[in-house]
Length: 262
Picture (cartoon, rainbow, N blue to C red):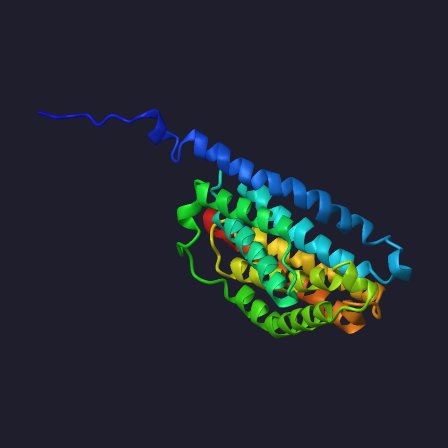
C-alpha cells in the first residue's frame, strides 16, 4: 500500500504570503525613508553651499551610507528575500547606525524605529535562514581589500565620533560628523559581507565600492573641509573602489567561463 504526500498551498509558497507581505512592508518603508533622506543628500551634497561650502563631505557621507549602502540592500532584498547577502548588508548598516549612536552618545528615535522595522523585515524574509549559513569559501581578494581598509576606516570613525561628541561647531549641530562615522563603519561592515561570498555578494561589493568612490571624489574636490579624506586619501579611496569592482568583474568573467567550459 502506498500513500501520496499531499502538499498544501502554504507549503508551496514557502514562508506564507502574509509573512512575505509583512517582510516587504518592513523593508520597503525604510527604503523609502532612506531614499528621501540619503538619496537627496547624495545629490545635493555635490552642490550644497551650506556653512560656506564646507558640508559637502559630510552630506555625501550621509548620502553614501543611507542612499547607497542601506538603500541598495533593502531594494535587493525586497523582490523575494532570496539574496541573503542583501539581508546581511541591511543588518550591518543598521548595526553601524546603532554603533554610531553609542559612539556619539546621541540616540535617534527615528533611526531606532527604522532599525526595528529592518530587523523585523529580515526576520520575516524567506531568506532569513540563509543569513547565517556559509555556502561558499571566502573571497580572498575582497577579504584582503577589507583588511587593508579596516584600520583607516576605524580610525576615521573614531575621530569623527570624537568630534561629534565634542560639539561646539555648526557641523556637529547638523550631525555631520555622525554621518561620517556611520559611513566608515558601514563601509567596513558591507565590505566584510561581500568578502564572505554569501549568495548575492556582488550587491554589497558594488555598494561598498560606490560609497567609497563618492567620498574619494569628494576628498579630491574638497581636500580641506571637515570629514574630507583629503587629496591623497581620496585617490587611495578611488583606487580601492576600482580594485573592488575589478574583483567583481573578474569573478563574473571566471564564473561565466567555467559554466561554458572555456
